[in-house]
Image (cartoon, rainbow, N blue to C red; front, top):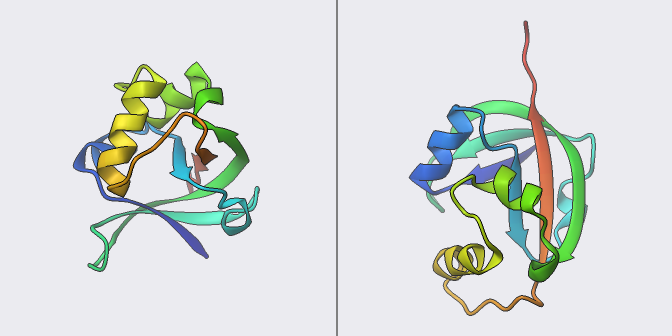
Length: 116
């Protein structure tokens, strides 16, 4: 089983409220998260213990340039980020490197698996 880990406390909050069902990751990582695969949605800092929030299925995976991200991509990634420049600033802080609108990202949509 794969894991999609999140480190930002804000992401933990919106994952738990189920308002986040997409993640945008720097680079082409499509091979790591095939569509229809089961993943654990986890929270925790790098190189430290992680807490499993829930299981999910990967619904859709695609690569794009930052400049090609849609409003839906941004909204499902983080409803508070309204523009590509805002997302680039967030990524520059997260990845601690310079990001351009031509950089490639992988967009991963996922849905929680419930056991009702």
